[in-house]
Image (tube, rainbow, N blue to C red; front, side, top):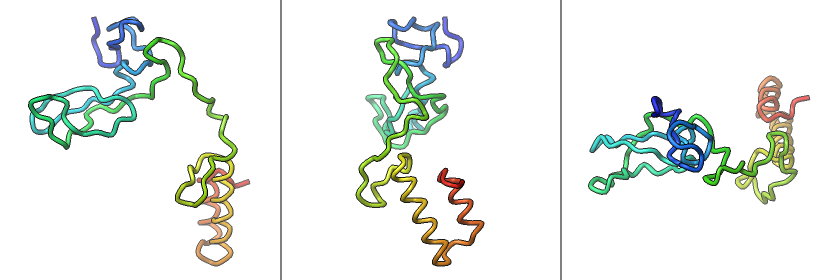
Length: 142
């Protein structure tokens, strides 16, 4: 029997109620939602941004997160480890063609941001300390 939301996984392939396994059915990977209109509660999948109440008699927009997901799924519903790059495996170029498209994570985007910081410092838009802080935030201060 499950005693806490973090103990519960509704996927029988992963062990059921007594095994929080990291799959998409594990409540640690879901947001617990509540509707202010009907007070209904449900679990929202990781990465889902919808705030529509899932109760068929309500279906109103505006539900709120009452308990956020603790982590993203690490296993699929089949119980197998999801393929994901290690944190140090960053793409070298995301293919952004304009600053609005930049991911901010890949090497090319960080270099572009670093060049922009330097340009702003050279034109006087940023003080030295502001430029250093921006570089530290961007991971380009050496």
